[in-house]
Image (cartoon, rainbow, N blue to C red; front, side, top):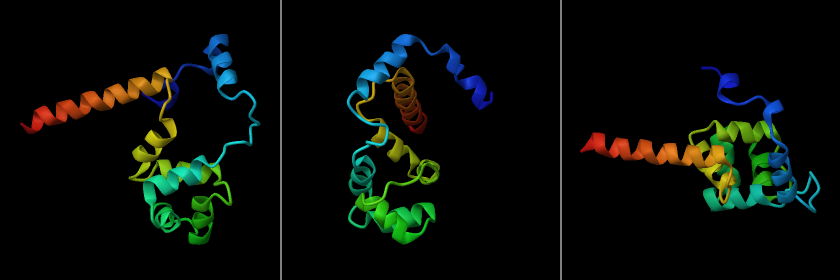
Amino acid sequence: MGIRESFPAFGAIEAADISAVDSAIADKSVADGGDWFADMAQDLLAPKAGTALHYITGFDERSCQRYAAGTVKPPAYFLRALLRSPQGAQVLEFLMQDSDAPWWRGLVRARRIAAAEDQIDRS
């Protein structure tokens, strides 16, 4: 099954879905993302988050240090590289914390089931 078959068409998004997103980002500009990336980097990769980002992604170390410090916002292709790294699951969990999105809850549940099955297989 390809990626396109895994997700509903964007045309199937309900008005209720859109209003939920609107209320979640009310009073924020599209560019206002806070310091979520720097917070994440410091939380997951301290004490040298910038250097760790460099080793994980292969991106320029100075750029990674700026991303980790929050002085420069990382580009989307950097986040993509980070999500595709061995640490990608931790990054995604940080980004999705406190999310009630049904697809996220389903993924968390599937991971718990898989972990339980792995534990049964080991015993």
